[in-house]
Image (tube, rainbow, N blue to C red):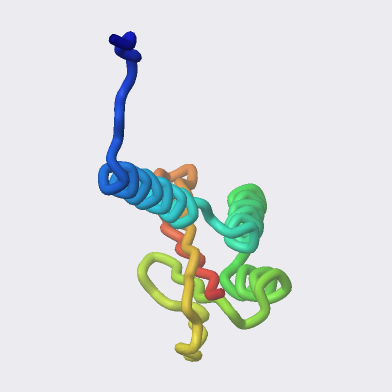
Length: 121
């Protein structure tokens, strides 16, 4: 009588089923990771928005200056909203993505001014 070997014995069906489950799980994890990571272009636009809003925070420019500065960075692919009023809005609706940033300015009289800059990609 031979010695029994320790271990598992898989049939062909169970091996195929385990490989299918493992491949499906790996594909789901890969797709979820790919969906969550922003593109480099989105990160660059967000960084430009942030830098521009920091500049506005320090300089307190007028609306027209804000529009001109945003046009230099983003062309005409943006909208600027100050306290709920649109000061510049692109009417082109062919854009697929938009990245938006909000800035709350509080002056010495504790008056809050909300600035929303949306860049279309």
